[in-house]
Image (cartoon, rainbow, N blue to C red; front, side):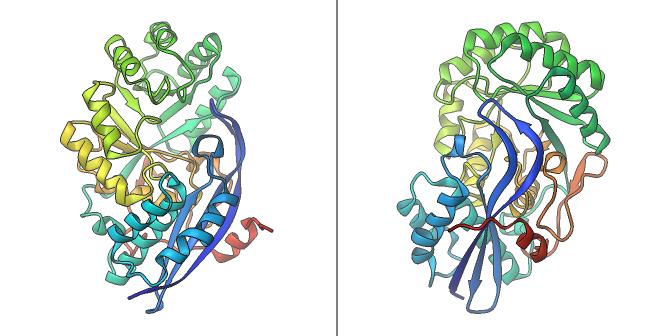
Length: 368
């Protein structure tokens, strides 16, 4: 079997209005990738174009890199040689993780379809049939964030992550207001997206100690391992790394510094499932559990996360699927829906989903 053609389709779906410490958003953008083989099998992948402010990759740059750099390197390759193909792309596109994510996801879908097995079996099999779900609420006025949290609960999701900013007093008010709105039994997480410093983090966490947060995620910059370790010693809840974890080597560094309790594993950062599993396996050996994180993926990437989470041996807390509550549409024929706080793991070949070509056409972004 050989790859004979690659197609790149940028698209964007409106979101309800979402902001984090980096920027605010009106659309969830992505690039759908179709890999065609000489056997007539098509594999679908998706490259995250959600947050150029963080990743440094937009749908324009992703499309250009895929067609001008990735496609010439992989056409003619056997899609079963995922390790070989990803090594080629690592050499060609060293720091371009979202482009590689899209190719990687398409390869896994192709292999699953060719073998008539789900992707989680390509990854080594599943440990669970359904995935516990968490969702985020973006930065806004405290009262509006409280309303957003209540709407998430109405959609059957009972783990909520609050986004933080660089406004200390307002962040404290946001946390307290949301806790009052949802009651004491709902799991709340806090994620400032590296907008704080070490001293402010410890101070804020003392102010909201009575809010009974489930965990704190990456409050300070990605490079500050010592700061993360100091924070971890001085707060009474688990500390999760996000911006600091991209590679297996990052997991080793975080462990060596005692800088976190668990990892937020995002396939846009790990260049897809191939390296995502490497990170998870190294983290497991180091005693660091993982969850699958969110980038408001509007289609295939969200389903790939389900397969990844299903394949994790240790999955102590809910994985994040904010796209379920914030993205106003999908390119999937059957939209993902949480039932009683869980997503079912698809069992069909590949990712086990179908693309709605009419919806894709409606959301397509034209590039001159």
